Length: 248
Image 1: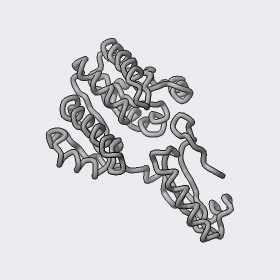
Image 2 (image 1 turned 90 degrees about the vertical axis):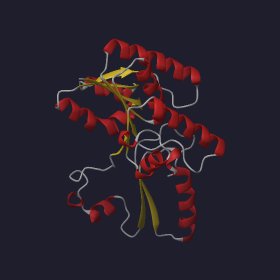
Image 3 (image 1 turned 30 degrees about the horizontal axis):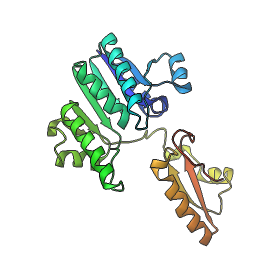
Image 4 (image 1 turned 60 degrees about the vertical axis):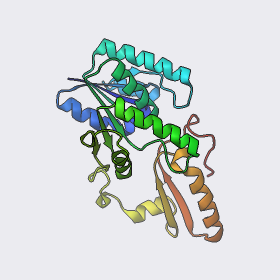
């Protein structure tokens, strides 16, 4: 059986999808990956992963999205995949539509977090919500949800049949992140944080994760408390994803 995993950028492949790809390949599935290939994607290719370049754009450029759709349709027709499994909002919209057009037998989307949220302007919320609901109902066979909130929203608003909406939860490796492997005192000493109260952020260092708001809040708190430190743990800042830089 031949599976295509689709996501917007190669960073997501390396940081999130490789365990899934490796597990599927260990069970004798043939797995290809479609994404916008840059340095990370080239590195993964050299390690033996089958990665196809699709020029996904993460903005609202319809011409760019059309080019990605056409190229993805061509790839699917050539490779004749049995399953398309998509991730990330824009790439999933394009790939689910491409899978529907090319009659792929099974079309699956993992929602790592719906793009729409309650802090959007009402008109933007309605548009993004409406697009996701239409795609979920008509262009998707199964939806997997990491967020229980997204799952319940999809159930309550009938995004698809209940048995096609599946909450898979989220998690991290209990071995890799086992506290017994880490010495807090040594870590604090290496970061010069022995006498500090530490606020820890773990996530992608991009605007949509609330970095601006976090920095503003920390600036207010640190002006009143001189024993605070903010520790950011995440991927590199990408100029295409953020229009500001963190102050050291």
